Image (cartoon, rainbow, N blue to C red; front, side, top):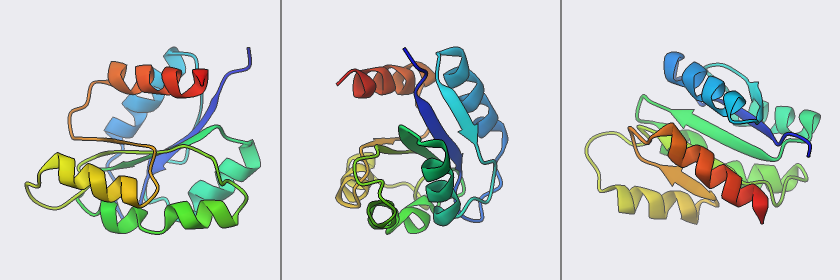
Length: 136
């Protein structure tokens, strides 16, 4: 079976690199082909990389609290680029301040995201979710 290709990176003006590298390493070890775009990645860069690599999913990371703003409109841009069914996943500190994660999750799902993770999600959870997603 071919490895599933996942484009990942840290969206917006966020520069947190350590978590992104750990995530990439863990997913590579779990058998995924990772395309890590690094930090300060625009929506357009995620989409271009996904189109170029025929990616199976886009995993957006954010730590500085502006992920919700940075992710707004990503699903529409993916649809316009021919990535209509690509799973979109997001995780980290996606919003500023202490907000109920269920509410944050609802907002991301309304924006067209497939899966949303709160801060401190275990990597095993993400790996399991991806395996389930790709087995469908």
